[in-house]
Image (tube, rainbow, N blue to C red; front, side, top):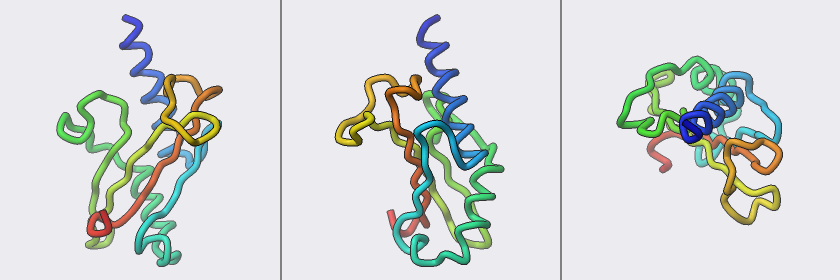
Length: 112
């Protein structure tokens, strides 16, 4: 039961970052070519926020931490990673926003 609660909490925090663009100790980063094409970032972030095509292949743990979609004919991927507050290590408690920094990286799939 604890693992289910933990997964639900991680999913809530991930969805908050993805859909609202912010959460406690969270940020969004554009990577690769997208980072240099600022005119496209807004529409892509909006598309990621509206994303709801969850499947076992992309979301096997139910945490909503990865997705891929097409935006204006370009394949886009995004991933949420969990770091310790010093950002030097992975977080041991991704369900706790007091000890975890969430970073959602968005990029064109071809840049991966």
